[in-house]
Length: 98
Image (cartoon, rainbow, N blue to C red; front, top):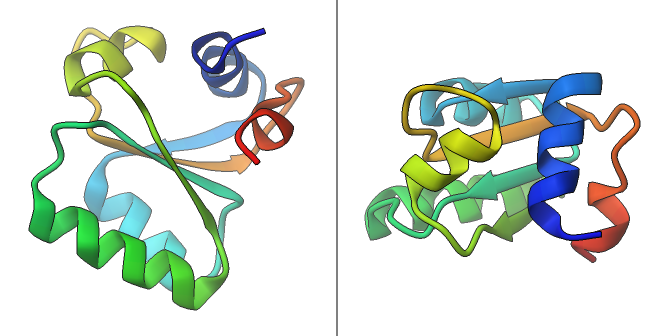
């Protein structure tokens, strides 16, 4: 199984938040298990998110595609630069990305 399949399964069966601002707010509160970041998120935002996630002890996975591709994987008709997996549902994304 690959990461894209598991991300989609997490979106469909678990609890996932989309977007940089929602992700940042919830990571600061310690809510979440994994942050998925597209490869075209600007460097300043990526570094800030990495720092906040490290403080909250939440893992980060760097998606190999851009935000349009990540949005497509999530089944959304818009770009998704960042998403936060709060509950993985039937997905194995947490074990695959270790």
